[in-house]
Length: 97
Image (cartoon, rainbow, N blue to C red; front, top):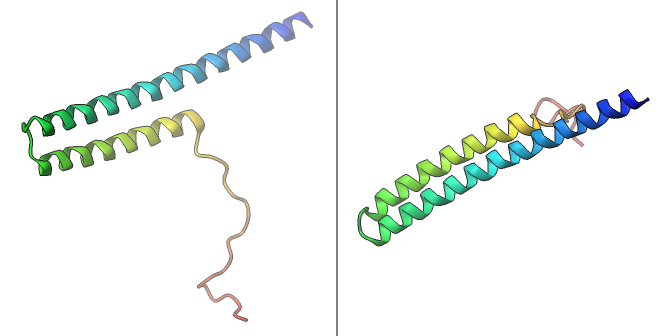
């Protein structure tokens, strides 16, 4: 019985550590994103870059950040639960009332 309890506690601790490290990676990604946004806004306010350059950089940053965050979340949480329900036959010759 003691072996089962020790094994359960070890598994629980491993899962907890894995969850904390993945949250840490997400926070690190978020802080890097916020730092770059601030850097771009300071450069715009100082006149180092134009509004068009700023918009282009922010758009690229948003796309990269969104893609990386989605990849990390899929790695951490998985793809989710697939729906087993049948989809309605809308537009595929289904009945019309």
